[in-house]
Amino acid sequence: MFDFGGPKASIEVEHASEIDEYDRPRMDAYIKSFVGKYEEIIPIKRLVINIKRHRSEGTRSKYSMNAALYTGQEVFRNKSFGWDVFAVADDMMIGLRKQAIKEKAKSRTISRTKVRRAKN
Image (cartoon, rainbow, N blue to C red; front, top):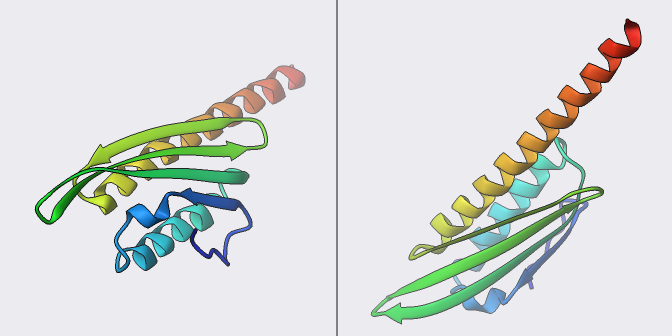
C-alpha cells in the first residue's frame, strides 16, 4: 500500500508489490498528482487501482491495471495493459480523465438547459 498524504480522496492500490521497488515512489507521486488535479473538477471519493504482473520475459514484465473511480453519484472504470508500468498507468488515468470530463460536461449542459427553460 502506498502512503498518500495530499489528496482528500481515499486511494487504494491493490497488489502494489507487483511494481519494482524503485518504481513505487514515482507511481505514488503520479497517482497523487492525478487525484489532486482532478479533485477540483469532480468530487473524487475513492480510487481503487488493481495492479497485476502477468509474465516476465528477461528484464521486461507485462502489466495490467484496473481502476475504479468513485464519485458521490458515478463509478468510472477503466483498464489497461502493456509492457511499461508507467505507460499502462498513464493510459488508464487518461481513460478515467476522459470519462470524468465527459460526465462533468454533460451535467453542466443539463443544468444550463434547465436554467434556460426556467427563464422562459
